[in-house]
Amino acid sequence: MSDLLPHEKGFHVSWDQIHRDSRALAWRLDGHGPDNGAWKAVVAITRGGMAPAMIVARELDIRMVDTISVKSYHHQDQGEAQVLNEPDAGMMGDGTGVLVVDDLVDSGKTLELVRQKYPKAHFATVYAKPKGRPQVDTFITEVSQDTWIFFPWDMAMQYVKPYRGSD
Ligand SMILES: O=P(O)(O)OC[C@H]1O[C@H](OP(=O)(O)OP(=O)(O)O)[C@H](O)[C@@H]1O
Ligand code: HPA
Ligand SMILES: [Mg+2]
Image 1: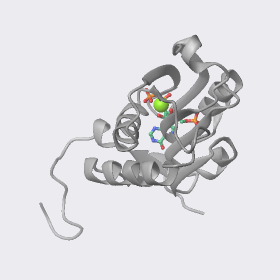
Image 2: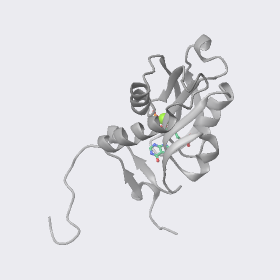
Image 3: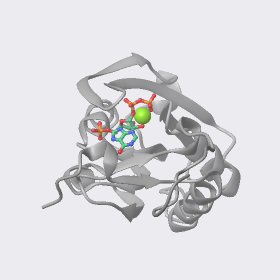
Image 4: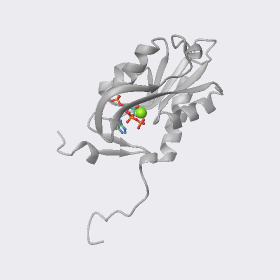
């Protein structure tokens, strides 16, 4: 068992990496929609799902794109998941043919909430932690539950001290 705090066991994802992994997600989903393999729309779970959703929509040539706004974390502290804004109800229906995309699933609470609203949608994330896996239909990379994933939009380049010697 690691004695590191969650934020110290970090998986740092670059823009290049999230682009590649989101394209891999699109590749995996391609041809698996219910309408002759096609998906009718992409819905991004804001805010983290927006970059992956844009890349998936671009790769799969899906022009119908909407968002659902869910907030559950303040920094690394989890609160109750809340829906702050919903996608167009006529377009969503029960979710059939809709790809709901997020950057990651952790506890699964966010996807659980969205799944209750659109039970027939397909839920896809780029990264997944074990607890959240039952909530996600398709994902690319699994990381351990005690790893904190750092996304490029939350990071900036900065100096790091060498492992040995003075700086
Ligand atoms: O599986 P869960 O434990 O629910 O956690 C996963 C969710 O938490 C993060 O979003 P957050 O609520 O922090 O908002 P953000 O996307 O705006 O950063 C992340 O982008 C997922 O949406
Ligand atoms: O590991 C994570 N990284 C970033 N945001 C998150 N929201 C829940 N878990 C995470
Ligand atoms: Mg999010």
